[in-house]
Length: 542
Image (cartoon, rainbow, N blue to C red; front, side, top):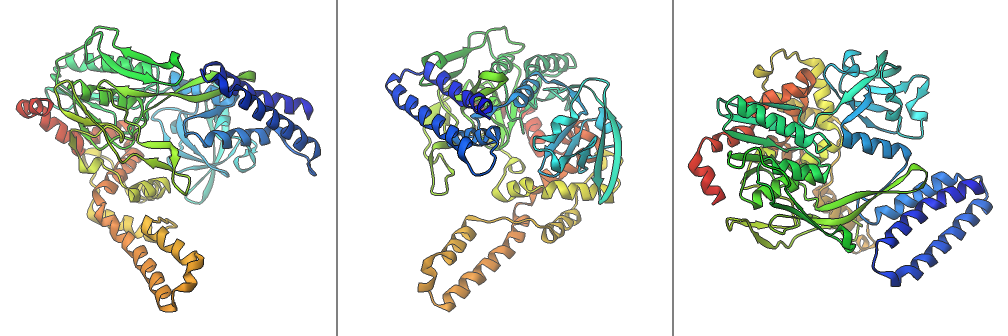
């Protein structure tokens, strides 16, 4: 036990020492050393004297995670497996079954099998619940069971899964999986090219460049770059993607930190592919980090019109720091500022409300683009033209987070036959079915008003109110619950967009979804219309 304790204590000690080494605040050294000594002695005494047998590794893992949660959600401790996953995510290559998988305590959920990869060939479908991998029950596996699906090329893995209540088994032969940063590009019309950039891994700029050149070769005189749902990735790739459209030597982003070596200016280093081609960039509430560097700086430089919905608002930069025994600390080292000097960070993790939640920025500062247009900091990138269907709200987010939209799409795909993506239409009758599905499900969603009323009823002050007032409170809560179903109609456009996306993927994979977008997506249609109106496009940037 003592050896385990010693090994695990070294991890946070090394992390703290690394931070100390880069800090100019040497006056804090004594206080840090003091706290380390207190923690070391506490950890030793706890493991030696606690009434039951302890697991030092689990205790330390919990201690580290709880400590880091006080900072921001991006500063994380990475164990050996996490480090490997982090490398794979950035490289865009790994060996496995080729499917997006979500992990739960007792199962793995197939979210999206990739077309023609092993999971797809083996017949797995979105919505399948993997309950056993080989002889190992997922419910009995302490770590992330999705790691068991990975392995060397050519090796096989047997999985037991549940589909629509029926237990099935299949054997999957693993393959090398390429995760494309640009999964789709195509001509929208004779003169407009469309490029989807879904992540900023090591392939992002090369694949975007290849797509851009090929589309130009097919006659593209205008480009739509789709960053919706792109969560970000490598800062260097964000600079390189921006560089495709702006000249060498342009300042794209600045990082500022308390540690001097992290204060840097990032400029474009190469010759652009095309500095004149009219460009529209699409963003939404799930476009974050590197996506916001690209969209924000192209907006600041008046190089593109931004369309869609306000982006996520992540203006923080992380860097992995090597620790002992193959572990790492992914730590927030700086804030980034786009070309105009604005930081688009939306949440203040260092000032929290009474519930411990980060406070959202409410005061915005004005900045100027190169042509003098007003832009603001603090809340993500606000598009030049907003598209209603691209917007989000707390109800839609709750439906997505609870898997209600996902589960309805699974149910829909087993009840309906769709053979041609161009003929697929999600009707009002289908939306009524969705509303019935929600009413019969376990979906729960508490608004701020409901939360305030419940807290008022549960406090000691409730005794002050008479029974009539208390009954009125309860009746109001019931009415608010009923009104939430009516809110499905209020936000039908945003909800239906997510339903259509999920359903189309079930039949035609992601490639089919993008083909569907070219025909019916409101943002792409609006972007194409704008690009075909030179005067309006130019007037927005001026």
